[in-house]
Length: 308
Image 1 (tube, rainbow, N blue to C red):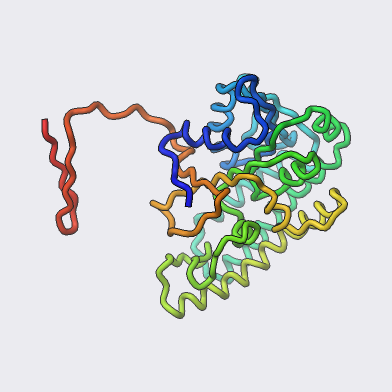
Image 2: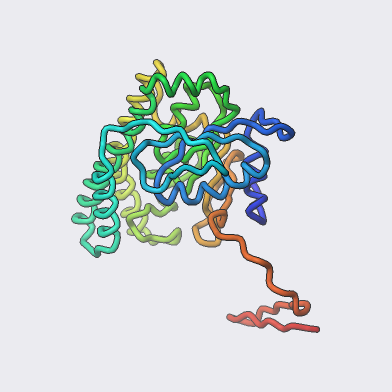
């Protein structure tokens, strides 16, 4: 298991280290295929540091989006048309946010989640298809000779582009639903021990909870089939070779995982998986030093004694 990095600059240093073929003296060319929403907001801090280190960044964005706006100081933005309206996206976001706070029985909640996932995945998939079959834009990407691609694999369109261009990819993510990330990396994730998202279980489960957890994993496959089977078909058609979703994502060179074991259960990591939990947190100035601190553990409480 690889150690965590101690600062935000350390996280970005890890990214730069694994962006294969980049020249740190003159700077490299990085293609970014982001996912909209909060995923994009956490990615901006990385792009900011890459810009400071002299790298050229191009961000591919659908014309209709929520948060991704032009920023000449950080990156060059390339847009492409999509066949849906801004009102459709805003209506979906509003409905999704309202549903987050509903307390409903599991079956009702599952049906609603299923319908929302179906709607959202259709929007993202339509956007991906519009990108891949935009001949003018794809020709520009080929001619630009990018060194690497930076993307969130939750929507795997970016990895399809990386495969097409024949360049290495760096993933920046929290997780891919249904354990697809673990399957792609052949990383152990036994359903008897790894809690599924909808169960509210921890990693400490009784036998009945483990059985329930296993059943929930089967239910997840229904949701994930709706989301990811179209991408498998699209990748196979576009790349002209068989490309199931796990095989597609297994080609990611480095996985930067936005989790921290302080907040989640311990789990195995493969050698190309690096935990960068806290990278989205704003940097703060260190506290003024007032003396040496000594910590003593006494039964169930911590006692802090400051010595001048």
